[in-house]
Image (cartoon, rainbow, N blue to C red; front, side):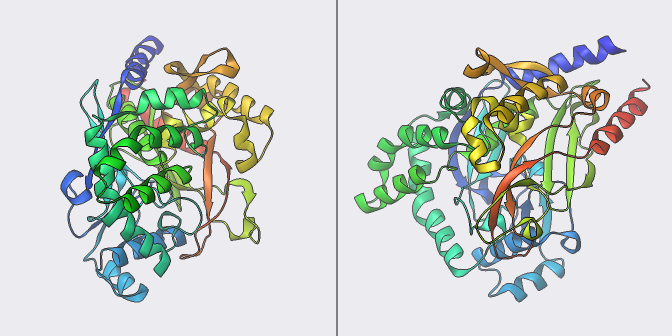
Length: 415
C-alpha cells in the first residue's frame, strides 16, 4: 500500500517540478479563459454563493460589475448578482487563479502562462498593487479609474512586449529571485524588478508614445507585486501538471474565498475539501487591528502548493518586517515544511540552506501523521466591502481538511 502511494506521489511531484511555465501572452479573459462568458465572474477559493460571500469578495464582485459597466452603482450590481443573471465560479475551475478576492471578469486582461513541458495553460489577472484595490474588495471611483487605465492603456503595451520578447520564463525568474531575497508570494521585490527589466525595452518600443511607455514601466517597477500574478499562474500550471495522478496523496490546490479554506488532492479528482477560514495573524496598517480583519482569502496559496511562499521563507528573511516574526522564524518555517512534503524542488533553491531545494509536494499522510499543517504567507483584507487591504501576516489551514481528505482517499482506494 505505502509503496503504491509513494510511487504515485513521486510521479505527481516529478511532473510539478519538471513543469516549465513560460509567460507567453496577455489578452482578454473572454477570449482566452476556457468556459468564460459574458455573464460569468470568477473568484478565488472553492465554490461559494453570494449569500455566504465575505465582505471583500462581495466588494470585488461589485467592483467588477462596475468595471464592466454592467451596473451603475453598488445596489444595482448586488441586485444583478442576486437575480441569478450573473454566475459565480472559482478561478480554479477555469485554469485560472486570482490573488485575494481573485475576481476576474470577461473584459479584464489576463496573463497566459504555458507549461512547455506538459502543454497545459493557466491564467491570472493584472496586479493593482497594495492597499485600496479591487482584489481587497475596494471599488470606489479612484479604484475604477486605475483599473480602466491598466486595461485600456497598459495591457495592450504589456501584451505586445510579452509577445515581442518571446515570453518570460517564470521558473527561471523565480529561481533567480529566490537567490535575491524573494519567497515568491508576499515578497516579490526582486522578481518584479527582473520582470520589469526584461520587458522594459519592448515596452519602450511598442508604447504609442514616451509618456505611456514611462507610465507602464513606472507602474511595473514601483509595484513590488507586479510579477505576483504571472507567478501565481505559473504555480497553477505546475500544480495542475501534478494533478490527477491515481493513488497520489499530494495536495495540488489550496485556496480561500474569505469564508472557507479549500484543498484538492491529486488522486481525488476535482473534489473540494473545505473548512471555515482561519484569521491571519500578522501586522496591521496604522489605524487597523485584528478586529477589522476578514478571515483568510485568495488563490495565492498556489505558491505554497508549488513549493514557494512560506515554504521558501528561509530565502527571504526580510519578509518578517511585513508579515511579522523574526529572521529565525522565517528559517524555521521552511525547515518545518520539509516534514510534510514529498520532495525538494530541483529548480528552486535556498542559499541560506546551502542551496537545498525548497520543500514541495504536500503529502496528506505526513500532515495527518505529524499534525503539522502548511504555513501560508498572506495579505489581510478588511472584513467590510469597499475598504481594501489593512495588513499582512501568516495563517495555517485547519487540520480537519487534511483528516477528511485522507479518510476519503482511504475509502476511495480501499486502503
